[in-house]
Image (tube, rainbow, N blue to C red; front, side, top):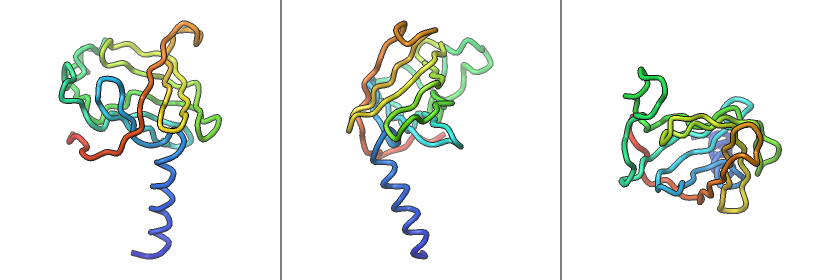
Amino acid sequence: MSGACLQLFAGIAGAQQSGMLGYWKEPGGSIVQVATCGKDICVNIVSISPTAPGRVDNNNPDASLRGRSLCGLRIGEGFEPVSPTKAEEGKLYDPKSGRTYRGRMESHGDELNLRGYVGISILGRTEKWSRTSVTKVCAR
C-alpha cells in the first residue's frame, strides 16, 4: 500500500475518533455510526443490540417499509456541521416510534448529546450516547 493511502487511512481513522464523527452506543445498546455524507453529517445503525425489541422497521408509518432491516438503516441525515463537535438542522428517524424529528447533536469528549424535537428545540428530548469501538457490524 502506498504511503499516500496509509496517510489517508490514518487521517480517516483519526477523524473517526474525535468530535462527533465515529461510533456511538445508544442507551438501548445498539451501535450507530456518525459520518460525513457529502457535505452533511448522517447517522446509520451498524449493530443491533441483542436486547432490541426487533430487527425490522415494524413501526414505520409507510407499510411498504415495515419489513426492512434496521441493520444499516439511516436514522439521521442532513445535519449541517457547525464545528467539529456540533451539527444542527438534521432529521432523525426513531424506529421505536416510527416518527421523524428535527435534530441536532453535540459531542463532549466521549459523550454525544443527540436532541430530537418537534418545532423548536425546547419541545424535545436529549439522548446521551457513549463513544465505542466497533467489534461487530451487522450484516445486511
